[in-house]
Image (tube, rainbow, N blue to C red; front, side, top):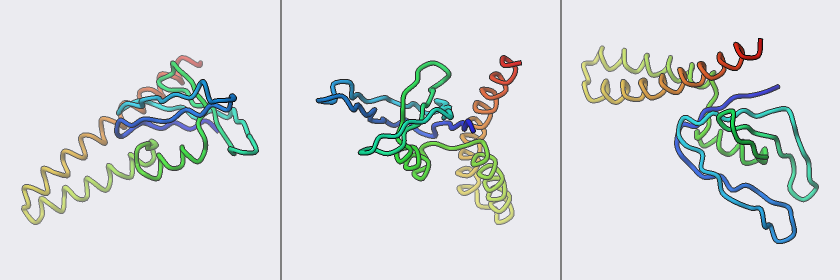
Length: 136
C-alpha cells in the first residue's frame, strides 16, 4: 500500500550506499512541507535490512531504510493525513478550553499550532487529490 507523509520540519537524511567505499553516500535535505510517497517497491539486504522506494514531491526518488522511516515518524518529523486530522481535532479542543478559561496566551499558542497543522493538511490533501485526478 502506498503511504504519503508530509514533513513537519526541515531535517537531513543520510542516503545509504552499499558500494565498496560507499562512494554514492550523500545527504538529502527534506524541507518542511515536502511530501514523501512511500511506494510498494522494496529491497532487502542481509546486513542492512529492508528499504523502500520513496518519492519526494513527485520529483526525485531514493531508497530509505524502514528503520529510518519509522524513526522520522516516531520523532514527529513526518506525519500522515490521519495524524494531522487527529492533531487538528485535539488543537480545536485545546482552543475551546483556552477560551473557556479565558487564557489568551494558551489560546494564541494553540491557534498558531492549529494554523501550522492546517497548512500541512491542506498541502498533503491537495497533493493526493492532484495525483488522483491526474491518474484517471
